[in-house]
Image (cartoon, rainbow, N blue to C red; front, side, top):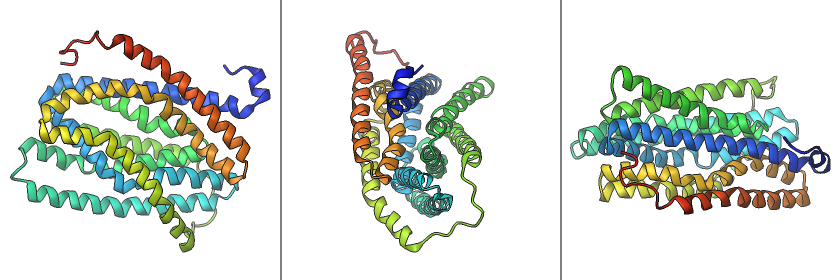
Length: 341
């Protein structure tokens, strides 16, 4: 509960603490679910097949970068601005334009991936090429889930924006993995990729239902101003660069390890990485909360309030990150080499 004194004295900090705490709880739950899915698949598939699965997912995540191209960040910003102005037409226009970008970019990326698989079909191991083939449709699913979540966060529904992709998808995926393995068995990575694809489609479906519930009412068909569209394209360049750098930084290690060391090393490494990512939970949780607030303060020219929010957020992230580092520092010598397998 938020102290009433804080709520009366500074409602912005109080709401940030409430939403940030909820977002952090979702992030922690998300990390636990990711770790549970990784451990379950690692034990079911074994290091080699799980390595092929992890390699395919990492490659697909990289392919999704040019499809999204910083669109979620742009959608959060423009949706928050339109929401502040009480202009639903602008909000709907950025959503429609973003959907078109994702459609054309996905078609281009999937076509390029299909050509690559066709050229490399005989050189790739059979299970690797089948896993990559089934992983390609995950690209638009990831982009659509990110777009729907960004739209919900821009409308101020921060927790709702994270729920479908960060929680429900993984709960559904973990449940489906365990049920499928119990009834039919999962022995190859391509089966796990198919289950992952079903989970991604499920997340998009749930996010679409939530967005239809909370979206602003528009009486006429949204018209996209060509001048505004050009501004959005110019905004995508720096945003896309930042997102691409982050995506490449988080996935290149898995790709390179698979190239030089093989799928078994990727399988062991990937599960370990899932545990290490707990350090950045607070940063990711609060970033999702403050992004639409930053956009709203900037639109209202409230520079002082924006600075206070940025400072307070940085302090909260440090406070919540330090305990995780301390726990990892004390526990680093207590894991066995065969812990995951």
